[in-house]
Every structure is written in C-alpha cells, then in structure tokens.
Length: 93
Image 1 (cartoon, rainbow, N blue to C red):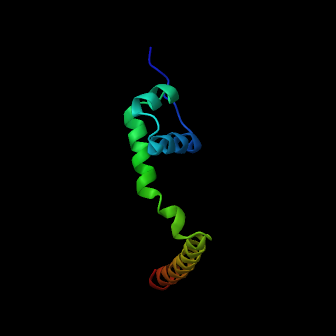
Image 2: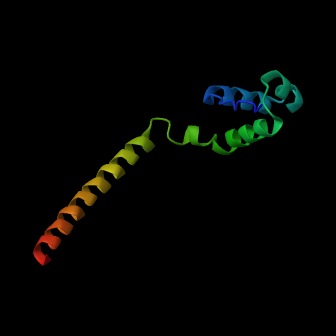
Image 3: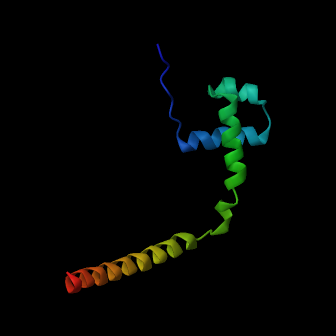
C-alpha cells in the first residue's frame, strides 16, 4: 500500500527551516522530531537562506503598490490595443 503524501503548511516549513538554521540539533534529530526527510529539511533551509533578503527589501509593501500600478497600466494598454484591433478588423473586413 502506498503512503499518503503529506502537505506541510508554510508555517511548519518555516519553523523546521529556522530550527535547522539555529543548528542546536543535528539534521538527523530534526528529521526524527518533525518526521520529515533530511533532504527536505535541507531544501527548506536553503530556500530560507536564499529568499530571506526579500523580507527586508520593501518593508512597507511598496513592491505590491508598484506591481499593482504596472498591472493597471498593462491592462489599460491591452484594452487600447484590443479596441484598435477591432477597429482595424471592421475597417478591413
């Protein structure tokens, strides 16, 4: 019989990765305590190390605001191009 695949919450992943970063316990101890394979713990630890700087880049959500402005501008441009395309199809058709 196959084993059911476990889905871990982001909070659980973060806790395990932080425990691994603290290095108070070995990976083997963390593996047995959290019932997660050592490779998975290593991947989560690496992810935290690589992406931790994103937490401090835009502390007030400026990135989200800039992203929304870009999205709005692109949607307006798509709408304008769609109108122009419809007009050209009507004119040539």
